[in-house]
Length: 299
Image (cartoon, rainbow, N blue to C red):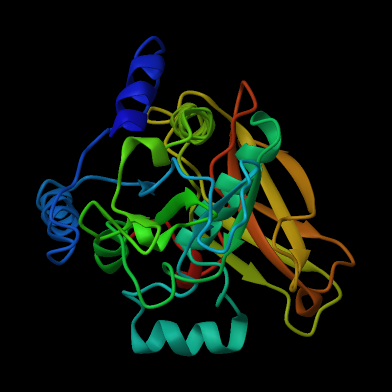
């Protein structure tokens, strides 16, 4: 909550064409109740959510395994959309997208922002909804069809979690203030601030991204033109592609704002994954959208 309040304090000094909402969610241990209540509220009020950043534990650098490190963080993201239909699953099986859901490409965005703006911080992209067998408040948003990720410390101390404050056999249990590294908490707060600012300054992610190229020497991507009234900052679009075993996008090509289709000559569709992002006049980009329902930010 301290991180959310500080990010709000800093970003309130700027103007954005999109909304940023800061919220505290309770009832996690009782069943992710706060996240579900807000996700249901968002649906009822037709919110167009482009990203949920769940920050749960961002202040500890001393792991239960003895590792002490303030230079890394983790972002957890679900690879396949929870709301995927049987027909959409069939499409994904033949065209790919298992690691390119809206949430997974939001996670790539988190990693990119850290590389661009946060010194001495390496973000680990964890290809999992959350820690093994555990959950967080981004999950109800994923289950409602919204992109959401969990950003958190890398080195957890399980003695500090879900325990009464006490000392037994020389081990201190419970969540106490001496377990917080405030410089590290500030670093992850900075990360959240730049993610939110960049997304809020960027145009919306492109909608209805499609791809063609089977049995051809080249690959063609198409998308719907963004509404200029809702996206006055739009400068154009950027096509991305990468090797299928790569975490991050490797190559890109910028296209002007009046473009809604482009062919990458002699780039064979079978060998890469592709996506499209929208770019503002100041260079801020949306998350990349993988073609088809597997990567759609629309629902």
